[in-house]
Length: 166
Image (cartoon, rainbow, N blue to C red; front, side):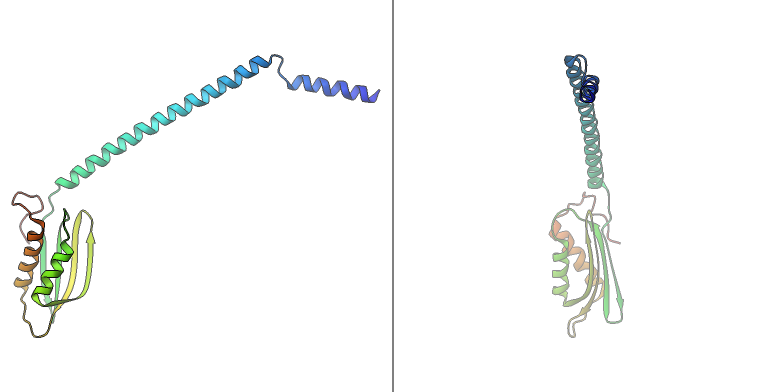
């Protein structure tokens, strides 16, 4: 008898666990899946809109960077036997570093230390010394660096980066 009671109780529990109408349970899970897919679709559309907004912001930022007016600046100081040369200008195309180092070599200057940054703005700080007994003046170095930058870049007079040298 105890076994029969146990069987009846377990069958009642089994009946309580299974839905009365299995089709309605399938419909409920189908609706849940549809709702979940719809929410995912909305989330995807929101992410696509945000991505498009970020693309527009990036393009506007790049346009602003391309039109910004950055003055070309070359400063030369002589401290003892060393020359401290500071250069800053916009970094369009070409290799300013190589052209400036070639100008130093032509002037007979050896670079002791250099710090260079190349992004949208090219900046460089160099400590150089004259090779051997060569005498080089501040004005010569400044002129050679400006010439190296301008000739290698082929800048036109109307270019935003081709403003006066300070």
